[in-house]
Length: 298
Image 1 (tube, rainbow, N blue to C red):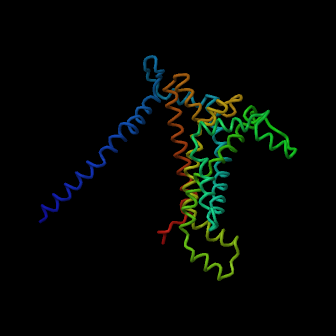
Image 2: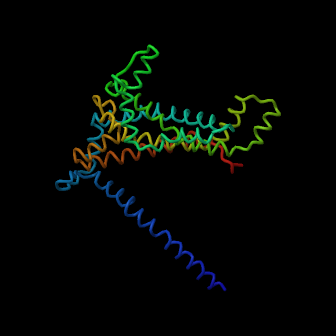
Image 3: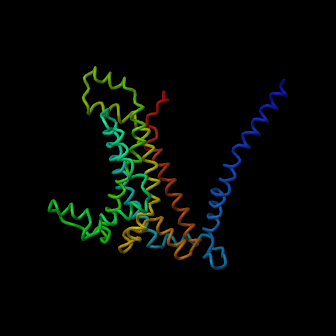
């Protein structure tokens, strides 16, 4: 009897590994393999069209003394520190508004979600026209209210705020996740609060926000990871200018890899980015992880 059971479990294990083998092979070839190779490259001077020279930690030392590294890191942190909180709040409030039971709500949800699935290049080209200094929609609206206009993408001080404003156009993606969390909140909690005489603000702050904190936490983590990888908008709309004011980290990494062909240095930049994102993610779990409510918590 025991032998037959062992054979059954062995056969099931073999079938399990057989079914996941395509994923394992894909992970090893397309993810783990390139990651390990890039780690090796980060310790070399490899310029694609030339030999490979082992330089040890030289790329990392050069990186610490590279003013454009610090400039790109500052631009990315600025974008993250302002853009992510604004996106979280805008997406959450939009989800709360679209969680009401009124007519045509499905239509409104679709309209607000659509911008988040528009290809990034197409969105960037559209926003170039919006931020055009002479005939763009942004300056036309400011002029309509007698407010000072701006050069937007051509201004060192306004190019990053312009890209942050553009990022808010895609809050519909986070909105859908918030909606899923909001619709999972038991209505009995609101009914009990109504019996106790709680107002709208009290119900929102003491029921809606805590009960959806796990969704907020998820979007916070994903938002910070995504903001550290911002690339397409800056590449298409400003090419990192003016005067490197929109040179984000991944754009600088791309320039080193595919314009200057400094693959070793670009690999070092990639691994530093990995460590930065990992550090921020662990920090978020440390600061907010225990404050998040999960339905299966005791």
